[in-house]
Amino acid sequence: PMSFFGIEVAAGEPAYYRPDQDCPGVRIKKATLTVDGGDGTAVTAGEATRVLIKCRVEKGPPYVLASFIPGKTENIALDVTFTDDVRISVSVISSPPLAAAAATPSKGFSQGPSASTKGSKSKAAKIAEAPPQPRYIVHLTGNIDDSYEVEDGDGGGDRSDGEKGESDEDESGSDTGSEGHASDTQSEASSASWGSGDDTDDDADANTAEDGTAGASGDSAAAREANGDDDTAVAARRLAAETGTRTGRWAVPAAEDEPAMMFWDARAGGVGSDWAYHIQTSGARQHRRAPQLPAGCTWTGDLRPALVSPRRRVPTLGWLVSPPDYARTGWPEAEFASPLQHRLEVKTSTQLAKMKAACSLGRAVMDAVAAAIAPGVTTDALDRICHVMSVMNGAYPSPRNYMGFPKSLCTSVNEVVCHGIPDARPLEDGDIVNLDITVYLNGYHGDLNETYLVGTGAGDKPRAESGKKLMATALESLELAIASCRPGMRFRDLGELIQGVGNNAGFGVVKDFCGHGIGSLFHCAPNVPHYARNKAVGVMKAGMTFTIEPMLNEGTHKCKHWPDGWTAVTADGGRSAQYEHTLAITASGVEVLTARTANSMPFY
Image (cartoon, rainbow, N blue to C red; front, side):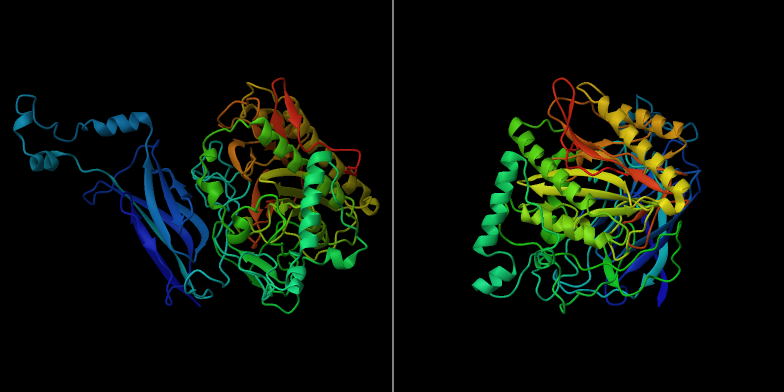
C-alpha cells in the first residue's frame, strides 16, 4: 500500500528524509517551485535564474534531482525512490547581471541612509531598511512505499545502488533517469556514462563473503580451493597477468571445460541464488531482485527483459593490485572523491604502460566474447566468458558491482542504447548486440565496446542491411573523431564531427551519455560529449587517456530506461549501435590502446 508523502525545502533551509518503520521508502513523483518576496508576496524571478534541487544520499556526492527556470518551469514530473538518509537542498544560480542587480537596491525600495548619515545607523535599522529577498520554495510530493524494509546497521539486506546519471547539473530539468543531456563539464561526482550507486552488495549468497568474493567458510585447503584461493590458482592468475603484461598474450578459457567455465557462478541453494529480474528506480540507490516485473511497465520496442542470474563470484587472492573499492561495497568512494573529477590527468610513462596492458587484455576479452556470438546463445553466457577470462588473467571485470551493476559486462541488443544487463534471452538471427567490456588490471582500467550482427540476418535481409548501415555509420563517426585527436584539440569539437556523420546518414546521435577520462579510475575528467554545440572543457595534451564512444540511433536521439534502472533504450524503439576505444594522446597524435588485432572478429 502507498500513501501520500510531501516535504518542503527552501533555499538555505535544507530538509531531510530518514527512513523508519512507518516510512521505509518514498517515491517522489513531482517537484513544484514557488517564489515569494520574502514577506509572502508572490514575485517573478528573472529568467536567467536557475533553481537546482540537490540531493545527497548518505555518504554519496550531491546530485541534481531537478532544475527549474522560475517563470518558465514551475512543475517537474519525477520518479525517484529514496530508501536511505537523504539531505535535500535548494541552490539558486543567477547570471552575473542578475547577481549584480541583487547587490543594488531596486527603485521600489528605500535607498538607505545618505553618505552623511551612513555611519549613524544601527545594524538593526540597516537590516530593517533592506528590501526583503525572494524566497525559493520547493515542494516534493509522492508516496510512501511500504514495499521496502528498514535495515538495522550496515549489513546485508536488499539495499544497493542507483543508475547511470551524468552530472550535478542536468540542463533538461529532470531526474538522472530522464532524457536530459549528459553534462558537458565536470561535476562534483562526474560518472561519465554511469551514475549514482550504493554501498552494499545485495545478493550475496550463503557461500559468498560480504565483499562479493567467493567466501566459503573456514580456512582449510578445501575451502581455499573452493574459493579459487588455493596456492595453485593464485599463482596461475598472477603468472597469467605478468605474462600477458609482458608479451600481450593472454590466457583464454576453454569453452568445452564446463567445470572451469561455471566455477565462478553463484552456488546453487544459497540466498539470492535464483534467477530473477533486476529492479531499480533510475537515480535511486536501492535495488532488488524480484520473480516478476512491476505492473504497468511500458516498452518502446519488441525487446523485453529476461531473468538475470546472480552476480558471479570473484576470488579474494591472486590480484596484482586489489580490485576497486566498489567491488566490495558497490559504491566507488575513491572515484567520486578524486580530484581527477575536476582535473585532467597527464599520465607518466609508467602509468601509460599499465594502461596499455589493461587495454590489451580488454581487447583480448572482447575478441573471445565476440567469437561466441551466435543465434541461440544467451547474453548471460557471454557474461560468463567475460568474467572467467578476466579473472583467470588476474583482472577484475570493472562493471561488476559498479554502483550495484549486477553483471561483468554490458550487452545491449537492438533498441538498447547502452548498459544492457546480460540475461537469459537467447540471441536471434538478425539481432545486433553491443558488448561493452572493461577490465581492471594492476590498478588501471581498459575500456572498449563494439556492436556485432548476430548470424547473417538472412530471414529479413532488408532489416539486416539497415542494421549494417547503422553499425558502419557509428564506427565511421568514431574513426573520424579519433583521427582528429592530437595535442591542442578541444574535447568539445569531437561532438561536431560525430554528429555531422550521424545526421548526414539520417541517424540520431545520443546526447544522454558521453565518453570519459579513464585510468586508475573507471570514470573521471574529461567528459567527451558526442553531439554538436556542447560545452565540454579542456584541450588534449600528450599523456591524457580517455574514451570516445558515440551511440547512433535509427530514429530519435532520445532515450528511456527500463525498470532495472540501467538499460537505456531508444524512445521510439529504433535500433542503436555504438563503438568505443580507449585512447592515449601522444606528442604527434593519438594511440588507440584498444585497437583491433588479427584475432578480432568481423562485425558482420
